[in-house]
Each structure stands twice: as C-alpha cells, then as structure tokens.
Length: 176
Image 1 (tube, rainbow, N blue to C red):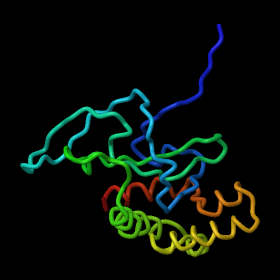
Image 2 (cartoon, rainbow, N blue to C red):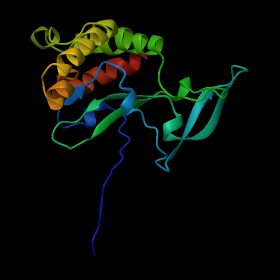
Image 3 (cartoon, rainbow, N blue to C red):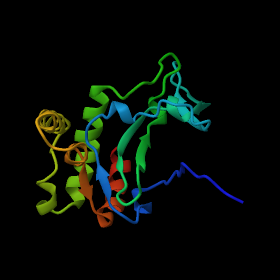
C-alpha cells in the first residue's frame, strides 16, 4: 500500500493549537488567497439583507478569509482566518478590502499582540497596517536590487513565539 499525501487541512479554534511559532504576515497577500476549489464546504452564519441571521453552505474559497502567516518547520504550511459573517449574498469574495484589513490589523490584531508580546520583541513588528505596507514596499524595492526570494519572504513576516499565541488569540476573538 502506498499513500501520497500532498495536503492537510485542520480547523483549530485557537492559535494555542500551534506548538511551534507563527510567521505572522501583517499585509494582504493576494497570491495567498484561497482561489482554487478545495472541494471543501463549511456551513456559515451571516447577516442577510433583512438583518436576520441566516445559514448557508459555501466552498472555503468563497468565505472571506485572510492569510495570517505560515508555520515554521512545516514546508508551505499556511494559516488562514475565516470571517464568515463578512460574507454577502450579492458579493463574490476575492479579498478583504483595504479598510477591512486596516481595521483587523490596527484595532484587533495589533492590539492583541501588543498586550501579550514583550516590548523587546514588539519593537520589531510594524505598529500599523500602513506601516507594514510601507515596510513590505521597501523590501520589495530592496528585493529588486539584491536579496534572495527567501529573504524577501521572511522580511515581510514576523516571528511570534508559541507562548504568546494562545493569549493573543483569546484577546483577538474578544475584539473581533
């Protein structure tokens, strides 16, 4: 018997499930959006046009989501956050808007990180969505003049140690 496993999906309810660190990506990574049909569906609740809570089954790619980062030590393992209540009947999801990303990063994720990460680590992270965009643009420019692709990728992500992930997630879910 032979097996060929080329992918795995897990749906943890907390970042505490990560036993290793997280390379957090604070910018929109359009190339990382789930665009293909993974043949997986999830039942979601959303607010209908009549402001009533409704349910619907959607493909994963159609549920608003955000690439949060990658897990070190596991080749090409991506971590996503899904926002099912942002789904709208008359709107095809392609990406979070800049405004949604700014609100999530500045008013939820950054606030959660800054409460639980020590200042000696915190000062290495961009303090806002706009700052992360500027930093990513600077690294992209630098990339064109020299550093390797791996350096470029690492430069736009920030290592969050596992002991901080559970508390960050708990604060984040209270804020969202």
